[in-house]
Image (cartoon, rainbow, N blue to C red; front, side, top):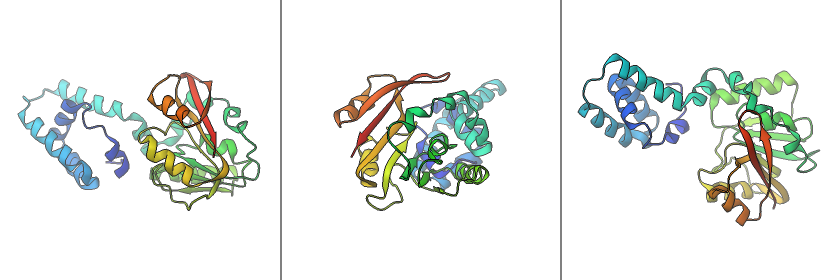
Length: 246
């Protein structure tokens, strides 16, 4: 019930269907909430209710397991809604900030950071950039970022609502556009939007931009002229970063 509309919209509809059906049958107020908070999920909710009605009665252990499976699948979203500092303190956020800061001279630049989360990229650059705009669709994370910027004394950090495929900026707004752990759900639309708000000659950097794999995202970015390199993210292992000059 603490999730944002966009998060509900992101729930994969073919994942954990039996568990979801059991949960919604046992907790009909959750079904009502999802369908009304995010109307694009109303059909999915109706399907799950029908599937749940056809299932045999679940005992306490099966139902508890279903609850656990659903919560485990979205544990990061729950942390965002309840206590973002837990996510900020995770070891994987300890990667070397020079992997980003040495891609170009950020001094005096206007930067957009997309999908800011708890601010790893923002606070790596806040002491260098003229101003940095953190785009984050989750309300509780925006509050966290605002308070953290104030606590650290950064008056040049601005936090706004928005999505990677629909950025709230005019054309050629920024000298640099950065993002980490966000790109790839809609590769064409997301890249087009990031390039739209980037000035000619500006830097587009995805740090981290991908797992260390020659997958579809890697092939897509390389085919469009991105350079790339590997670096280590604590606990999670090797990642890839990508950068392009417009």
